[in-house]
Length: 145
Image 1 (cartoon, rainbow, N blue to C red):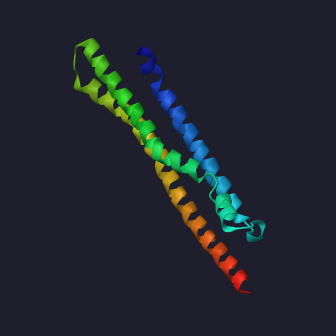
Image 2: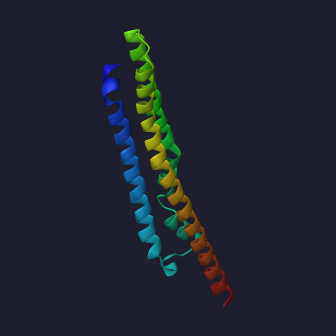
Image 3: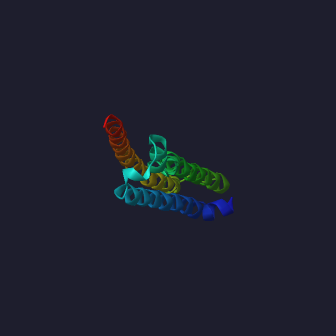
């Protein structure tokens, strides 16, 4: 239990920091890619859609799982608080409240990673839908001409 007490915050913060880094990398990569897209480089609609939607699954996984990683840190922090209370045998409101407030920072960080990732995911998805519609319109107009 002592190991968890000392290192759980660090472990959770490292995991969430890594998730935030990967999410940021995916967003920047997609923005740069979508800026330079050329419709003529693609043979068909499927190839185009596969190319423009790359890395979106990673972003989806991050935004959907970051709150759970934070929640795991909070639950472990609460367990440690109750364990310490049981070992001491003395229940002071001050120690309980401070332990619980420290445990909640992991959930806050999980939400801090998840919310911007969700916003970026939705923005990229909208841009991809627009580009896909434009590509389909272009293909249809080329078939007519």
